[in-house]
Amino acid sequence: MNLSEALQLIREIPDFPSPGILFRDITPLLANGPAFKKVIEELSKNDRGYSHVVGIEARGFIFGAAIAAESGVGFVPLRKAGKLPHATIARNYGLEYGSDVLEAHIDAVAASDSVLIVDDVLATGGTIIAAIELMNELGAEISEVVVLFEIESLGGRARIESKFPGISIRSVVKA
Image (cartoon, rainbow, N blue to C red; front, side, top):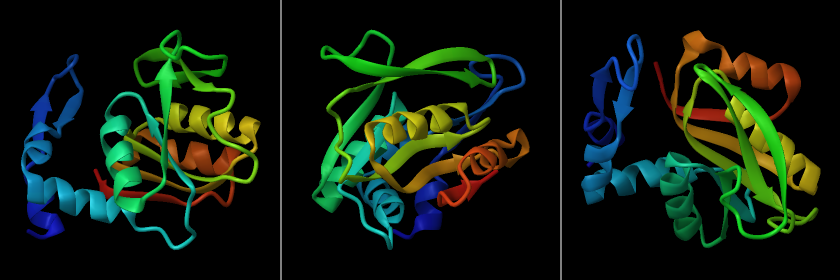
């Protein structure tokens, strides 16, 4: 299976979770082993290397954990507030339809670590900015940010690049 065939398994669901939103349903892709493997191989590509994969709740966990296993490195989950059991640091962030809080354990990574930040979608950029800020506070170097989808019309890439110039952002699909 090639990457194009794998990506064709993603369904578009109009008006979900609310009117005007076009939701990309990845469950058919995840259910197809060869397709999922192909997408993980694509997301794993990185010339700079990384010691950890940082996955953003919730669908970033699916891709991030698989990338970490494929790459033989550690996985760090970034969770919504109150979900991590140990001492945490937190960042508030805006969404296209509200706001939320993202947390990391205070010992999730060390200053000598290089991280690949993974999420399913880059929309307004708020979630990824919060992830970068958390990793910066912990002292980790950002190797790259990688997403499956980028919704270009929402301007997330520009927001991230204006706040963090020089960080590499890679998307498999731009919509």
